[in-house]
Amino acid sequence: MNHVVGVGDMKTGCREDMIVTHALGSCLGLMVYDPAAQVGGLLHAMLPLSKINLQKASENPYMFVDTGVPELFRQLYDLGGQKSRMVIRAAGCGQPLGNSEMFKIGERNHTILKKLLWKNNILLEAEDVGGVASRTVYFDISTGQVIISSKGVKREL
Amino acid sequence: MNQKELNLILDDVKSFPSMPAAALKLLTLLKDENTSNTQIEQILRYEPGLTANILKLTNSAFFGLPKQIGSIRQAILMIGWKKLIQIVLASCVSAIIDKPVQGYDLSPGDLWRHSIAVSVASETLVKELKLSVSEEVFTAALLHDVGKMVLGRYVKEDIALIDGEELQDVPFEQVERSIFGIDHAEIGANILKRWSFPSSMISAVRWHHDPDGAPQTSHLIDVVHVADVLCLMSGIGVGREGLQYRPSPTACERIGLTEALLEKVASQTLQWANELAASLQTDS
Image (cartoon, rainbow over all chains, first blue to last red; front, side, top):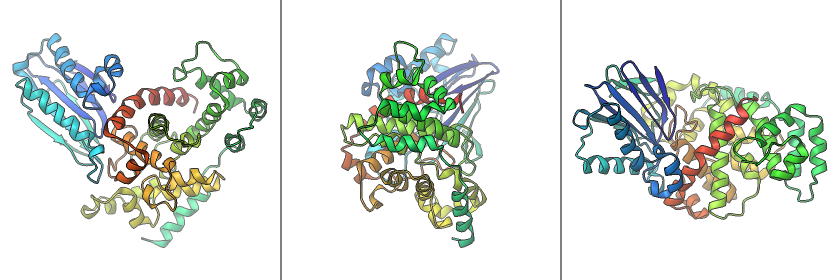
């Protein structure tokens, strides 16, 4: 089955599923996979910290990195995933040209992700982050393969 | 830059679809504080398509009204005539821009969703920053990228040039200018001029990527500029060029924007934009 993940959204899948998310700008795309259980999930989080809008965060934890990432792991555990086997990859976190601190939402998303993973002793396997590119991610749960597409060019992550 | 191509682009602007007459009439009423509900009802009386759209939208989750609205008169009473005129314009604009845009690689509905999101983000910025910006901001934001509909096919033709290594750190509207002698913002402004839109709205469209370049800077331009970058970053209607634009720190300063506020506005925009876009899209 094909799942499409919107902005501020998360989907999990198993076996033959394919999870896709389009147009990652400064948002974080996080792909977590357990090859033994053959389960995986893709989070498309928009903003780093839920404290900016706690009401929204309680309605939709996937809008924020600090609430979305733990929720993604929790759901994978429910599907039989185990932390020790998880393979984690990240994409997105881009930013516009110039060096305006204010618009470094992508960098802030990335920083919060790193902090969360580090605190939980989890390593990032691979990432394709930063720059001005808009990225689309194809996450194949049957193989765990992640393909990133940008400007019509596809590459494996 | 090639003069022949520029002439072709300008010809396309001339043959671009026009705005329905009713929309233009309503637009002139938007600025007039003495506008009466009867005047608006009269204009809409002969526009059954528009009326149907208005009622559908007024009854959408976006407005969260306690009961179903069945007439224009009721709609004006519930949401106010200024909001109602914006809805009429949005409905007309959706018919024009709810199409795929080549070159920028936008799928059907992408530009429409982006435009609605920028409108919602602009209004939220005005509210959060307590700026005195006119009601025009919603419609100006809605139309800021209309020029992409014309320039798209030329962007596609010259994509190899645009993808050149040396242009990758250049803001995209400047890339367009260097290749075509014009950018999508100026083309959009030309379209609005042909539609006889108010000059403040033409300026907002013209300078939305270069708010400091405007002969007269304004909060209206600054707000649309910031809202546009924010929606691109959030991935709402972001095209092939991605985030290849440069936000202006001076524009942010002029409107008193902070990092926290920018993120708050982003968190508020998504849901409303989705609901508003969806309720109008079914009609187009």
